[in-house]
Amino acid sequence: MPIVKTSKLITIERHIAEEGAMHPEATGEFSHLLRDFTLAMRILARDVRRAGLNDVLGTTDGSNVHGEQVKRLDLHANDIIFRAMDHGGHLCVMASEESNGLIRIPNEYRRGKYVLVFDPLDGSSNIDVNVTIGTIFSIYKRVDPTLVTDGELEDCLQHGYKQVAAGYCMYGSSTQLVYTSGNGVDVFTFDPTIGEFLLTYEKIRIPQRGKIYSVNSGNAHIWPQGIRDYVSWLLRPSDDGLRPYSLRYVGTMVADVHRTLHYGGIFLYPGDARMPDGKLRLVYEVNPMAFLVEQAGGRATDGVNRLLDVKPTSLHQRIPCFMGSTDDVLDVERFLQDALQP
Ligand code: AHM
Ligand code: MG
Image (cartoon, rainbow, N blue to C red):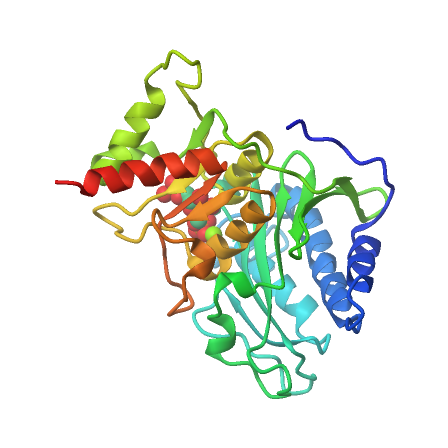
């Protein structure tokens, strides 16, 4: 299906407020939470753009030309998101790829009913070379929303299907924020001249089948047989012209899933002999992306189970992931099944 640009001139804040107004029980708190979050995205969009100039690239123990301590960009992103989100009174706890344990709300601020989990800067191998990177986020309601105390681990370890909203911000040739609150997937593009994210694509739909696959083929020698068979099959031309597939792999999940959402096909990070559960983290990388892919009409599984139905057991848990066009994900699941037959 061709992707149609919207003609509606509307900011992300207005859009989220309008979506909230469709729920009579909504208090507006959620819109305020997202407003705080998009402030962090605006700041990061600026900082990523100026990364090389600011000397913020490099290691954490370096200092810039002014003799100031410089932060690695991913730690800087973690810090900015925390500082934008800690005082709004909407969250009871946060968790991030960059923090081992839970991130508590400072004592002086009110605790709210929402939980934020995020990967502040995804695509770490691409940060230093100006290749597309992104921020991934997901929001849950705490398990017992009547509480006004600190959120706990169980609040961050909820099933992915319980996400209230999720999305990513991609710092590419332009900065785009791709967002769902369970009512389809909308794309907003940042206009730096007015400092706003504007709606650019409304309710995007992933094609039923694509012609692109996205995987780190350098791991082929340690893949399970089913994955090797599947990728060899993708590369064999077929009479109906559906194959061979093209390979595209940025190595930033945000960018690879973004392309997959628009053009279709499949993004996969399977388990292998070195990392049986793959590399990607369930709570703050895989689940938000799985939610978006499903909301755009695609499929997201661990090869057998729907990812959003998996109960996380730890914050930094990894899981094999296969997501994209429904027919493509069904194909790989079939190959994995077949490889199990004696
Ligand atoms: P990161 O969170 O350290 O950036 O790691 C996650 C990234 C994903 O963005 C990407 O899909 C994957 O790691 C690439 O891994 P590899 O270099 O093994 O292909
Ligand atoms: Mg990451």
